[in-house]
View 1 (cartoon, one colour):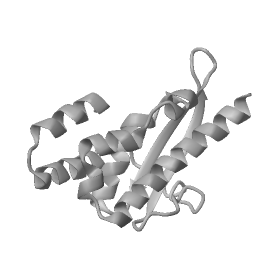
View 2 (cartoon, rainbow, N blue to C red):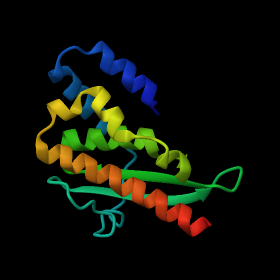
View 3 (tube, one colour):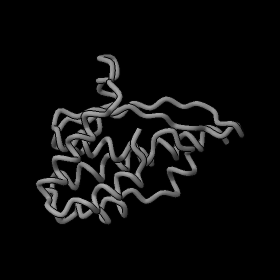
View 4 (cartoon, rainbow, N blue to C red):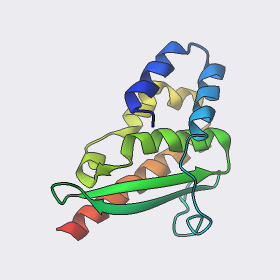
Length: 143
């Protein structure tokens, strides 16, 4: 699996946004497949123009802290790539690590705010808020 640092390095090598978009689409193709059952209304992210699903599974880490594992999907190629970047950043992390990580700052660093439509930017924000809400709920349930 690609790390967020590898994605950052690859983005730095690509000067043109057409090349960056192709790379984002390619990342989307690496997503772990989602089952039909996971394409459910409960897993659908509200606030996205495209259809986006995020399914989580909670495990316990070595120190018994809750760890969230995600699978995701979208019906739009670029959005599917954004899901892949988001899951690279957040999946298999503890709830506390998720809450301590500012995904929107990372997406700004990559330049997405200037290069995504307002609808896609809102959808991206909705995906981040969904994962952060999941992490908050998981932490509250573990207390």
